[in-house]
Amino acid sequence: MKRILIIAVVCTSVAVFAEPPTNGLTEGRPFSTNDLPGLRKAYPFFDGMPPDIPEGDIRRRDEWETQPYSITKLNAKGERVLLSKAEITDNRRSARLAGVYSCFTSFGQLAKICDGVFIGEIVEARYLSAEDERAIKKGIVVNVGLTFRVETNLFGRIPTISTFAPMSWYGGEHSPEAGKKLMVFYAKGYTWNIFDNIQDRGPLGFDWEKPPEDTSAQPSVPLKRGSCLLFLDTPELESAYIEVASQYLDLLRRKKCDPDTYYAYLRSLAKSPVLRIRQDAREEMLRLLGPYGPDRFDLQRALDDPDLMDFFKDYIRYIAIPNRERRHAEAQKK
Image (cartoon, rainbow, N blue to C red; front, side, top):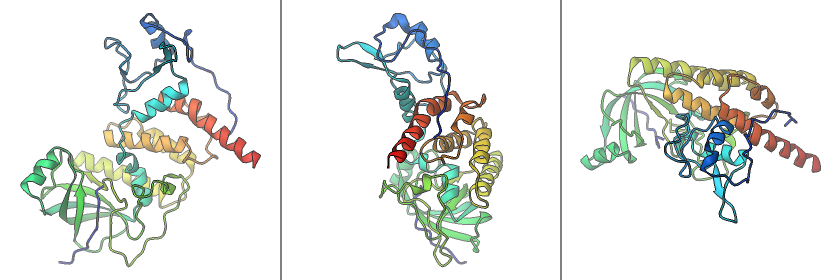
């Protein structure tokens, strides 16, 4: 039986908009706990629980923002004052679920940088000691050799029935056991090494085009670090992942993607019942609206969308539009 070796690490335009009501609470104005009712009304989008808000002050939460973040600071006089809307929005962005690796391994990013995707089953796991197995259960990354039986090629083609892949295992609660079914993204030639070169952010750009694959190269992981494996624990999850991966590949690789079409697709996924799908769509939406998105995408149109998440509207209002206007102004000075 022939095997393929994979060296792996699992890896503006000017706009006018209405300001939300502030209920007398403005940036820099000192306030006290007596202002909390007004704070609730001024910030109905508030999704976190920073240390300076009493524990009993329960607000609506969003699963995307899992970390505490601050909406206030101490001024030079030691008074507690409200941060600006832009600062609060940026703090919320930093508090989202995506970590240093996962924000670069969304369905969309993997689809953009891969040369192929297959569904495969683990036949054998090698190089695992008892200590490694205990480490995996604690979420620690370990090196493991895997043999896959390739069942379906979704994109590209692995011509063999199985492939051997020594890789770093980012399994979390999943152990690399025989019989586990996975969706695997791989590359042939180009590998994105953003963790070695933080300046290499090209693939984040909406209009970035992946270099042609090297047909003579052995399959490898598309990322230096970060998981390129998705676990298919149930037939329902497998079906959902295959459908969404196929759509991303169709939009981003099989045709020239239009930002309006991509926006509409991400918007449809943002409320998916599958956690990974909706979180990845939100990561992609953040990039599309921000500096990695094309200027030809109409931010005002997104701001006027009644179904867009409140967070993204605040991001557009306080960060994306001002940043785009600033870039345009700087370009005109040159």
